[in-house]
Length: 261
Image (cartoon, rainbow, N blue to C red):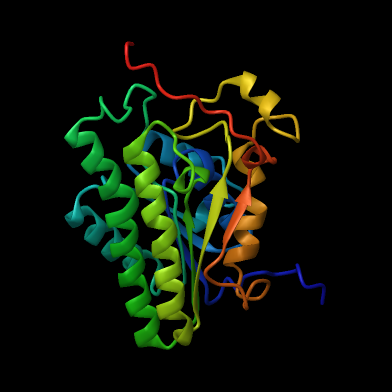
């Protein structure tokens, strides 16, 4: 059998994807149901998540969930609803993140914006990942988790609430991977570049900074996301951050913010 046939076992494997209403989360969730994996599409926007399911290859395998992951009670509701729908959750993708505005530089970002970014990216990502792992450990079943971080976990972005939360996620991936590996739970990160979707409003002129000559698309990440999630394809891969950026990280094109604006 070719190694890329049947990367998942639809009879035993399931998935929960946050931020599945648009952008990268949407592309990954749609790709999972396309591989026959029953998947919960979680998002804060009912309209976009329903659209994501409707336009997927196999809507019957998808379940919509709508809520605000900045609230711990909503994270717990998501876990309960996902378990009701799926049973044991074997694959987790955390792509949810609040929108970001270029105006929110270090001297302008509000406390509420700062706390909300951390609540969704870091706190929800940790709580959901830990609870999913606890269930897998109790069931003695392998699993895999994938977190969407950022090039700006290491490079300033003029958006400190965003870059610091992504830096925290990057270390959380390593912490989880080191702790959970003994239970056959793999944890990895995808590191997107300039992807024209989700919370990033892409400026087409950025293409001149990208060696491959174009902005990225959400669909550019989905194939590798599935390969990393698959225990069959990537069963010996954990604690790594895989950059998918068209080569933009080879350049340094951000300037300091205009504080007079």
